[in-house]
Image 1 (cartoon, protein in one colour):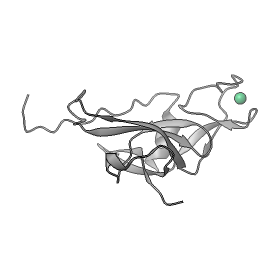
Image 2: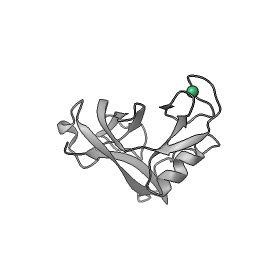
Image 3: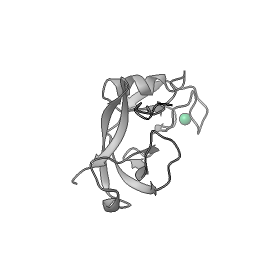
Length: 137
Ligand SMILES: [Zn+2]
């Protein structure tokens, strides 16, 4: 293995259930599956509402706003594409569902539970992925 080759991040898998989500990310929009019957969003995308099991009818745009529900700072390398230290955050979206992501534009030491954040899309290997950055309230 060449020491000069940049190790690329493994990208999220696109399958039937997640295609609409990732296609919207590619357009710079955060959408979530929405159940007309329960009138609720959920994440991650599945082919049926986790509450009533109705098939997914729609994806709706969401604000992209939320807050840090929890987070961890990794200090050990588990994959060569993710050199430590780095954060992994659980974001509670305004619309209710939680999403695992990474906080950017902030030092790991400044991350706080409850801090307001906003989605931002960054391109990696031609794919736009949702990250979150701090926002002022
Ligand atoms: Zn439902």
